[in-house]
Image (cartoon, rainbow, N blue to C red; front, side, top):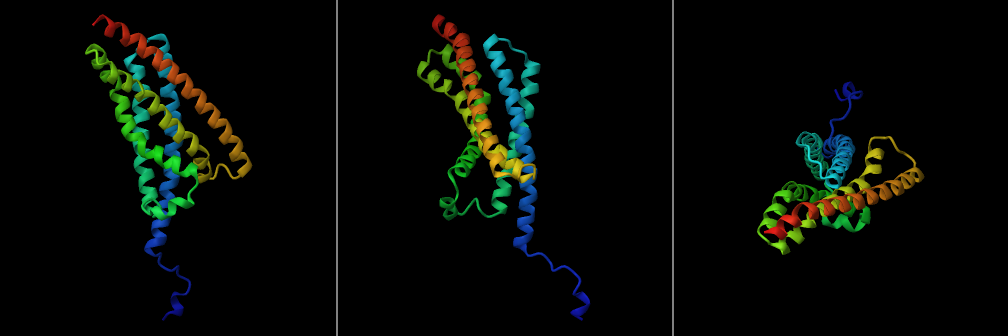
Amino acid sequence: MMAGFAGLPEPLSKTKRGERTGMKLKKINAVLGLLSAAALLIHIGYTIYAYLTLYYNPVLKLLTAIPQMVLICLHAVCGMAAVFLQADGTRMDLYPKQNRRTILQRMTAALILPMLILHLNTYTLLKSTAEGGQWVWFALLMLAQPLFYATALIHTATSLTRSLITLGWLGSRERQKKIDRVVYVLCAAIFAAAVFAVVKGELAMFLPAGGAA
C-alpha cells in the first residue's frame, strides 16, 4: 500500500506552510514597500513645492497624499503579518543576532503609522495653537513634520535594497552596498530639503497670524 504512494509529495507541515506563506507575503510586501516609497517621494516633492511657493491645490494634495497613505497602511499591515508568520517578530532573544539596520528598519516601521496620523493633523493643530498663542505647543508641533519625514525616509533607506533582493532583482552584495550609499545620500538630501521648506512655510503662514493675535 505504501509503495503505491511513493511518488506523491509528502504533506507540508504547519511550519513549512507558514514559511511559504510568509515568503509570499514578504514578496507582496516588498512590492508594496517600493510603491509606497515612490508615493512618499512624490508627496514630499509636492510638499516642498507647496511650502516654498505657498501654493495650495486641494486636488494635487489629495492625488499625492491618498495613494501614499493607502500604500503605507497596506505595507505596514502586510509587513507585520510576514514578520509574525515567520516567528521572528515576537522572540526577543533573536534581536541580539539582528544587525542595527534590521532593528532600525523595524523600529521605523512600527513608528510610521502613529507618525502618519500626527502628520495628517499637524496643519490643524499648528493653526489652533498659533491662534491661541500656545507657542510652546506650536514649537513642539513644528517637530512633527520633520519626524514623520525622518521616520519614513529612514525606513525607505534601510528597506529599498532588501526589497529588491526579496524580489530577486538584486543579487550582488557589492551592488547592494553601492545602491545603499546612493539611497542614503538621496534620502538625506530629500529630508534636508523637506525640513527647510516645511519649517520656512509654516513660519511664514502661522507666525504673522500668531503675532497679530
